[in-house]
Image 1 (cartoon, one colour):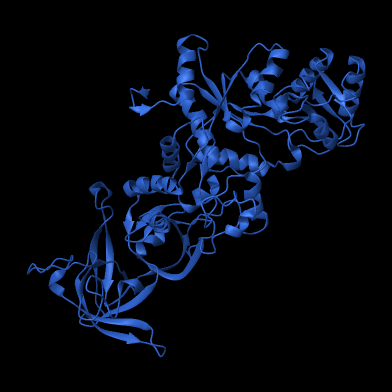
Image 2: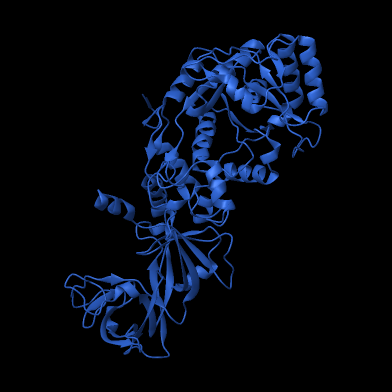
Length: 562
């Protein structure tokens, strides 16, 4: 099935929603994105954001942003703020529909009381370890708690004592009374309230008991009138509890939970717990480290919101877990920047070139295209003088026949400038090449020979006199193996790529980049796509991050290994 307006495949969730609207089950679709404010969002969350907000936009409806803030020991307003910034940066807006699970604490407590009064919940004094022992296995039924058949009155009294703070943490919990023999272990009297003597970032010390996710989630959806509750496949078994709570309480609205495959990308980890390890153990430089696939990390590295939305569109929504190659994400940003990023010249590992027949005190301005395929992006001027910088790799002293760059006696084209010929090589006392002496043909301004002679090699350059000196950071994949957290014998951190960050100092960039804005993106011709770092860059010390290379070099490496 395809969308006739876009000619794109329609995923199974959109098909379900379209059918519900067609049948009159719903007049309006309302979705929600419900993150826990206990960490920064990553690319997997971006998939959910694009799905939920995308469906709302497609149906001229709304998507709620709701924080599942039921675990105050791990939550922070810092995460709340970062999540809102990430969603906005991706291009979505919740308008007036910003909610918190803590908005419903009073109502959730009343719902818990109703379950107790119905004989469907009880206070249990088993420890968490004892509960695990009573729970049973996939092949054996669980064993009932000795506290399961307390009277309604006793349970109400005990729950009130829990609320007042009369019990220490871990001494008791409120459990739903369902079925200890259920084949679905989640339905074996799950805990729905636990004691936590922790101050909440919004409610302060009002509560010392907090509802569990499964109890909170479905009732929050119901209270907000959510029509379709979209979540990843790990919650598939939880759907039975989701439905049980709503059916048992006979709520006026019963949202439909639909599960889809989570996003798995190779050469990274997607577990929030493992990402936190990387941060806390200083394997990376914070949640926004450009090597991290957090949204803040991708943003700082230079990924565009459009590229991430396009990536989520490309991978689609499925029912079965699968792995997405990192190259797909990199191609998405490469495709976007190929169209939108202006071109500039930057020399990352400078080698000095002196044009011996160019006047010492003279300089001129040459015209360069900002984008060779988009005339609307205009032109800029490049200063040119006697001394230049070229890439060290663009010179080879004993070059093979098919090396079309600088070598003694060979002529090459300087991009937008002149044809030059290397005449002499200057070395230091250690035999390292430190300077090239070249001559230029003044009749070839713009890089074209009037006599029609052909020159195969074209290299980039920067005027030494006018160059912007900058730090450039070359980022690569954080891990050296495709699935770093799937080896049960080794710690995933053992596979961290030691070359995931290379820092190059004193790079020479064309002077127009001195006015670059933070997060502004460029293609350094022949080098890749780069942006000005939003955190460390300063006017006196500009820092540029490589977003992605011009081509997928990892694909070649993978093919060689196979």
